[in-house]
Amino acid sequence: VQLQASGGGLVQAGGSLRLSCAASGRTFSSYGMGWFRQAPGKEREFVGAISMSGHSKYYAASVKGRFNISRDNAKNTMYLQMNSLKSEDTAVYYCAARGSPGTETDYYTERAYDFWGQGTQVTVST
Image (tube, one colour):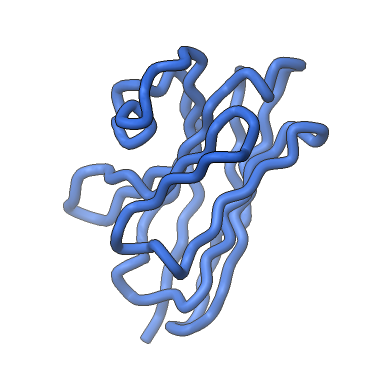
C-alpha cells in the first residue's frame, strides 16, 4: 500500500489542524494505521493509532485529549484531528500502515509498521 500524508502547515499555539493520510489499493481496511512524528534533533515517536475497523484507538500520553484519530475505510483515508496545539507538537508527521494482526503493543511500535508515507510538516508558533 502507498500512503500520502497531507494537511500540515503553520498554525498558532492553541489552534487546530487536521492531517489526512490517503492510501492506495483496495485493502485499506485490512491495515492497522498509525501516526508518528519527528521533531528536529529528536527520534521519531508514536502519536496515535487506530485499528483496522476503527473501533480501537491508541494515543501517546502527550497528545491524549487533544488529538483524535479516525478513518474512513470507504475513502481509504485516515485522519488526525489536532486541537489545542502546542509548540512542542512541531514536527514532521508520518502515517504508517501495518498488515499483521499483532498485539495492542505493536500499534505503539515503529518497527511493527510495514508501510510509511512521506511526512507532512506541522509547525506551531507561539
